Image 1 (tube, rainbow, N blue to C red):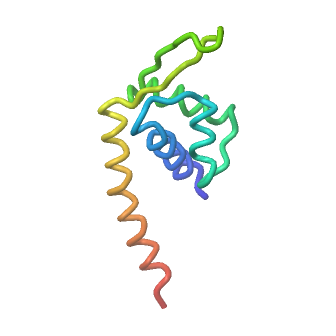
Image 2: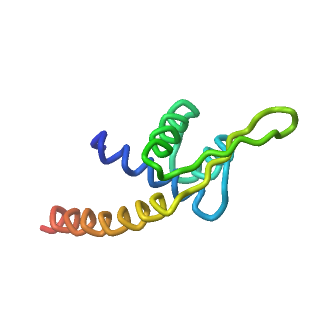
Length: 101
């Protein structure tokens, strides 16, 4: 898969994983595992990129004596998911065109 396309897909999958409730790294990996394999290092790179793009907000809390970062999707992150769904319809139309005989 094209690197740029894959990057966009991974970003949106992470956003979708926290759309309904705030989440943290390990849980995000667990939640997306049925559809894609995501390493911790890849996830944290994605989370940092999404935070810098203002699609996520980060909150630190104390959990079992350790600091845990929770990620919260912003309105900009929700908008990105909706844009992606529209873009994906266009990609599927192109795919259908390529596949027809």
